[in-house]
Length: 147
Image (tube, rainbow, N blue to C red; front, side):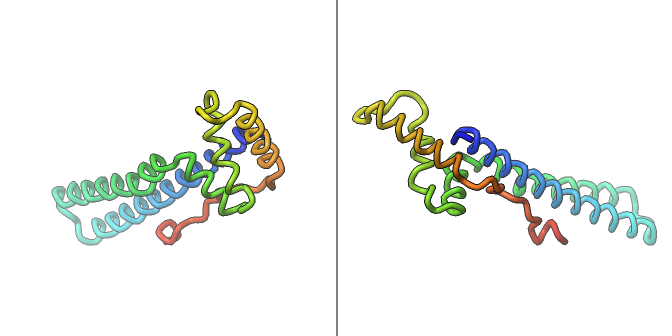
């Protein structure tokens, strides 16, 4: 598997983990909110204005959760973060993968020969192919998702 394929797979794994975390926290919060509101309404017969206020509070909490658990991590996920995680998981890959990814785009930079660039990219492809076929990013529910 080439570096490009491996990097895209790692990024997809991280995106899947972000999506699952956001869905777990948002879904759990929604169930808890509506469950508590239904019980309170059942036993206290809440007025309509209070129900609307509770709904608005739920919507604000959901918006905050989606921003904090989905939007911000999704936007922050760049190739540097992916290759930093790969470097932490497989230390021998640290000096090679990110630099090869940067060199793969376009022609060689001034002062860098095309042969050096292509050999560096080939070495990175061989290293990426030799890495174990285990997921780099696994989703493990956070404490907020487990509650």
